[in-house]
Length: 341
Length: 237
Image (cartoon, rainbow over all chains, first blue to last red):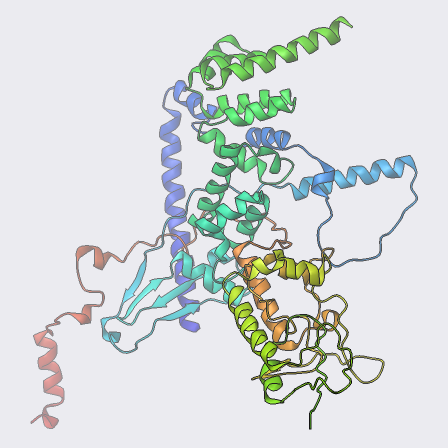
């Protein structure tokens, strides 16, 4: 334990030294950067690649997700209590609705979208003197309570004497053993296998699968990414976008589809449900993420907004151009009628 | 003497294990004696007993591979209708308050008890994790919790099997269940900490040396060796 403590101290001091070095390098880079031309600065400030966490992207995604209070607060199966009734004035009702909306926004918080984590292959020591001493691996876990799980040292002593850091799968298993999370299993449930996933998708329970995935896996693990990708693919194939609308997963699905450049189905669905503003914001998000595509450049040159954006997208990029144009025409007719009347 | 044995079989299909007992007791009727009018499900002929045994054996194997077929069959609908399997069952116990636990098991070896529980009394009802309709009868539709054995009347052995089957079905995704909400706030996913990030190996390894110096051949300094030998000269051979 003492040895582990000293090892941690050593590591911490080493990391601090590393950080100092890194910051020095950063300063050097900054000084050289200021001497560079202005055009490079502009390119960098546009955003070489907008990330999921950018405020503009998050804003668009939250707007598209919608806020259907009936769906967010639908009755769930839980321990039954007798219902409470309250007599309220209009103002109190208004306040209650506002607080419900705040609560709903918290429930619709989007889970993080991260790149896949790199495997850990670090060897800390190779003590050949211990080779053959034992037949089993020993795993040493730092079970100090107050440190984040991502800063917890877990090392494995192999029978051949190597002391290495534990792999991500071993880490997840051990952290769940010592610090169990609610409903997370040590062995992932069989629902995440291909056949079972297909069966669940045929029952239209995509939201349940995604919730279970959030509970079971870490956001940057390969299983998490694989299950999410499979779910989004199935949704896109069958056009069942409504299942995820007004849930916390809609933003992730939209981001996935925008990055894969397959937004047509979603735009068609939005137009069917007469959510034109959402369709427009989706197209603007697409242009933000793929600034070098034809439609993005066309839109930038024409400074288009609103339905013009959709028209440009339909002409340049989309495969289902016909439907989008028809829907736009119908909308324009309705708009003309309402303005005439 | 002819002995008439009343064997009260409340449902048309016999108990799978009761047959051995029935076969042991010789039951014959004499046409001369005033016959009591038997109820329609009164078996008192040895020939019919054999038929029943064969039928029961068939019934055992008929739904063994696909236990969910039984819940669609006419037999089931005739017997239970739309109500759950355990509805109408009443435990037999002394006093007004039933014991906190139901009996340990209804079937011990070949023998079945009197008034068996709703699952043991029907040999076609098999608890299997793919038999979703049956499992759902034992889960409350409002709270999503499994009914206790005191509510349904099943014996403890079958209740345990039921619980295991329900967890397996939920694992496979056949049965839905309520999933807790996961908070994602204040977590750092950069993986920059040394516990999960990369630590560069010590400089000696990059050169290509062994991990510890003393793993490889170490030749001692001759001056040092001479000094040591001089100090311990008296003790050296």
